[in-house]
Length: 172
Picture 1 (tube, rainbow, N blue to C red):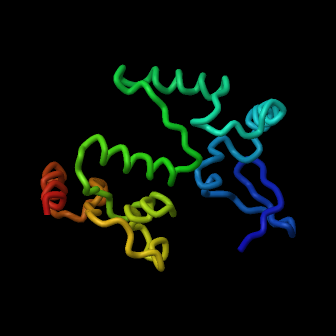
Picture 2 (cartoon, rainbow, N blue to C red):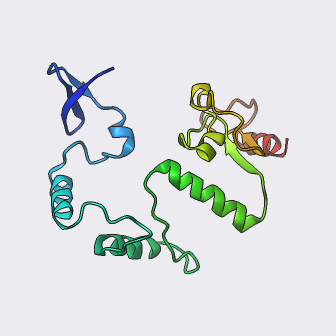
Picture 3 (cartoon, rainbow, N blue to C red):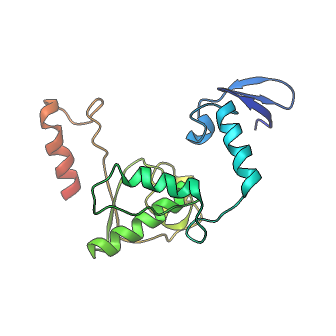
C-alpha cells in the first residue's frame, strides 16, 4: 500500500517522495483537486467558527444556504434535505425512504454496483464478493437487474430493441 504524505491537484506523494496521479479523486470527494486553495480557505474559515455541527441536530448558515439552493432545483413537493455523513449512510436512508414511500419490502439493485459497506448498502452491492464476504446473511428481498448500458450491451440485435431485453430481465 502507498503511505501518502501530502497531495496537491491531481497528485499524491508518498512518504518517500514518489509522486502518483490520483485517478480516484479521493473516491470522488476531491473533484476540484487535492488542496485546492479556495476549498482549503473555506475549510479554515469554517473550522475557526465550528468544527462539527452535527446535521439533523444543529443548524448553521452554510448548511441552510445549501438546503435552499438544493431544494430550489427540485419540484415543490420535494422540499426537504436529509443530510448524511457518507454515501453509504445516504443509501441506507434511501432504502428506508423507498420502503416507507412504496409500502413494498423488496429492492431492485443493479448488477455490478457498489453502494457502500454498511449493512443495507452491502445488501444492494454486487460489485465484488469480498465487499459482502463474512457478513451474510444480509437483507433479503434484493433483486438484481442489469444496468441498461447500451454502448456495450450484451444483447444482440438492433440497439433500439435493447430496452426490451433489459425490461425482460427486470420482469424475470
